[in-house]
Structures are given as C-alpha cells and as structure tokens.
Length: 84
Image 1 (cartoon, rainbow, N blue to C red):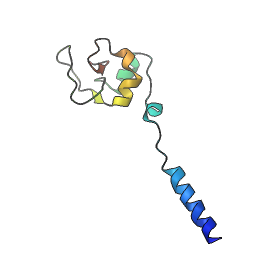
Image 2: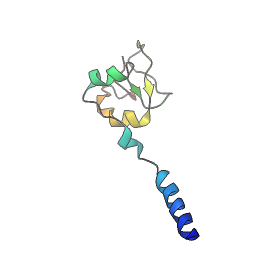
Image 3: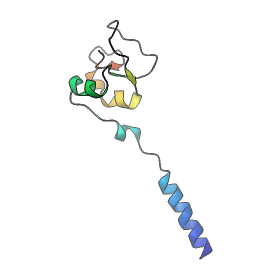
Image 4: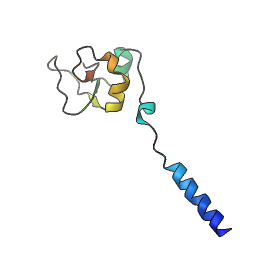
C-alpha cells in the first residue's frame, strides 16, 4: 500500500508539472486593430528589436510566442507586429 501511494503521488507531481506549449497559449489576432486593443505599442519578437519606421507613441510588448502567432501583421518585417 505504501509503494502504491508513493507511486500515485509521484505520478500526480509529474502530471502537474508538464510544460504547456507556449505557442498554444499565444493568442492570434484577426488584425492590428484587435491586437492594439490589448497591446497599444504592438508586439516585438525581442527587446533588442529596432523599429524600421522610426519613433512610435507606445513601447511594444515583448513576447516571441505572441509575435510568432501574429507575425502576419508585421508588414515591414522588422520584428515588431502592429507597432504604433
């Protein structure tokens, strides 16, 4: 009985710590208007990404997973989707 309980607890711990794929969590937006409601400055691939278009009003949110889910909205291909 004791071995069974140890095995059960070990299995529960393993199941509870299974990493979730980040791409499954990243929301895909229909267009830039929808994305900018949640992220006014857009979404950058990394914090070192520079905007090709010059100065913007808002600083972009940095998230590779979110950028990858919405890279279709990066018209100038600078690594920032929907920058404003």
